[in-house]
Image (tube, rainbow, N blue to C red; front, side, top):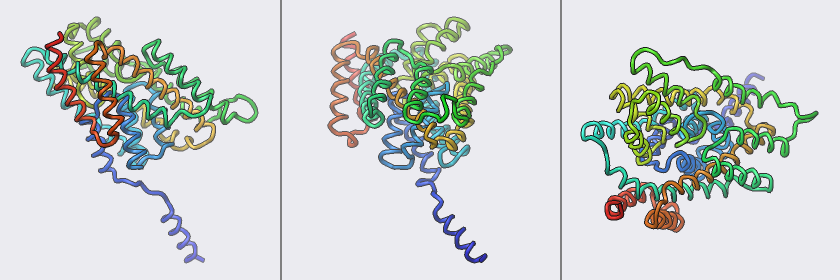
Length: 402
């Protein structure tokens, strides 16, 4: 009897699914993406889907969708939150922590180095020339990723309606609105998996959403004391209360860094944004550059850390609820709606960014050629090679045109 029970337990253990990759492999991937992943959050989430879901098959489609939904619902940098969640999927808090650090650190070291050169040599005017070419190329990379996500995620009439509405709202408002994602999730939930006995919200959905709002509505104390304390408090607010990804944090930072605290001039702030755009990894790493200009290396570490700590907490605290309840029909439908709205916002962001980056015939030509090359060669053309080539083109063309 006991022998049979032991054999049964062994067979159960053998049948238990294990991770298809080691934690070290995921850390190396995060380091690579953080080092060469150009294009900002829109492109980065596309790379994660292509690499981890489609090619390596380390992450399931449902786990990716849940992570993307959580990253869209919570404040903070989209790509960093998704990387943290994907690290959590098989290796929990340890995985979330080391994968998140591996993803963020490469770009942090880059902006610190650029900050040192900026302070020592009095500005980086060559950035305009580099971004002239890189910005146009990045639009093509983002558009290509957004198109692939659309093909993968958007199917069915109601899904297309949600997607197109999300695209339109993003283009019109030039921002990602949290209520669009919530309404989309609830709508798909009601259509595809309506609750029995009326419209009462299922308890499991409450378990997922409530921790987010509990954290998001927690007050942050007023800054006081020395400059490093002020940096910590201000950038914690930036990470905890700014919804939307990438450039959505820029208006918030401008209001505090330039207008309220007067830490930087308009020119210095624009240079900080340019640094974020020409370096790989998350766009909000510009906080590290700003911190360096304000208070040196200590300021850089505190500003970047304060920005990313809230997004880390906003990910690992609700993550168990997503893992536990995400497969239920109602929750799966809710996540599907949020993911579709997020995909629409990504495509809308492509249009918004294109209007800012494609400013003349050469930039339009660079973008179209880059997209054509990505379309033709698909997996055979590494994005970093394309970005580097575009930077060289920018350095040559920009002085001639401007």
